[in-house]
Image (cartoon, rainbow, N blue to C red; front, side, top):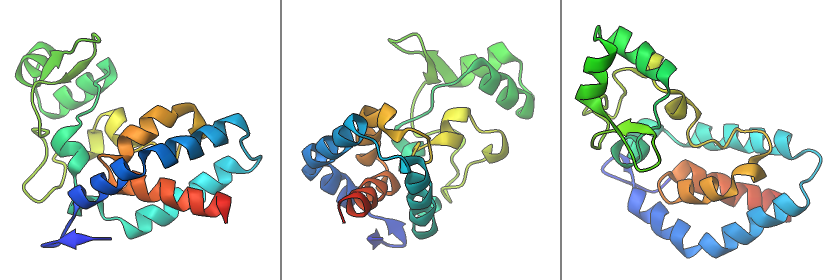
Length: 169
């Protein structure tokens, strides 16, 4: 992992992801056309390998600039934890975006601490729990999302690189 001052160098990985975008798109498209029988097992193994190398608390870029989509269940769970009425929680933190989804009013995430730790980790939104979606079955069904995530998440970038090396090597 390339780091600066004990933090993952997000710009370094973003630039690599942008440089390799077409290569990654072509590779993921090839998986979609003809997925190997054992792809889910391979992706699970690579996901685990990547997250043994990557310490998300040295990055937290997703929490700083992406922000999750909030489901009603997420809102209820976090509002309860924060001891807030649903309407007050939504007024304080959320807005409806152009797609009609509930998202944060502004970024970075208001629950992200200075130490890059999540203040609501145990009740965090589903989208946060699943990000960057590299442990999902049938990964080829979310190729566009995977490509987007490589630009924000060094772990997603490394996942695609390792998957390419494994499948082509």
